[in-house]
View 1 (tube, rainbow, N blue to C red):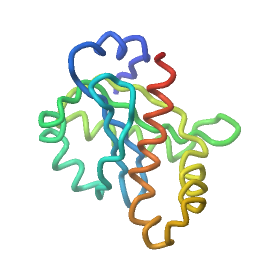
View 2: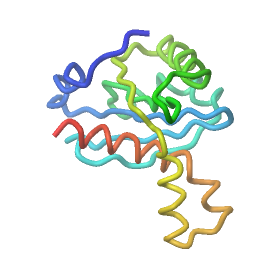
View 3: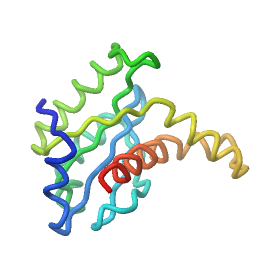
View 4: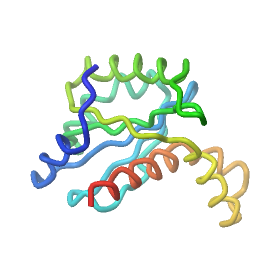
Length: 149
């Protein structure tokens, strides 16, 4: 897997295309998409790992995706652990479907921030469980988009 720095992805910005944000989890994979101006990240869908692997190529084509921003689950002390290795292995599988530039993005506490927001919005626990993964992907991708400004 070749990791692209954000300046290399930024060179693709004015092509009327989108970025895909992925929050990898052991059971579910949250997916978000940027708008064409790379201003706003929107929650898209939650997939099982197998479903996303099967549908990735079609998703990239139908949504005009030119880059992948993947949540990098480093430990709180900044070290890389087994979950980062699992993310890297998953990204390699995705890139067999469609080669894209990849940028890793620190996702520490993103799911916690999303849960806090959903609690404040008084979402039921059931509804939180349904949307947390795609919301975390959107939160993470939005942070990346804001870093490009």
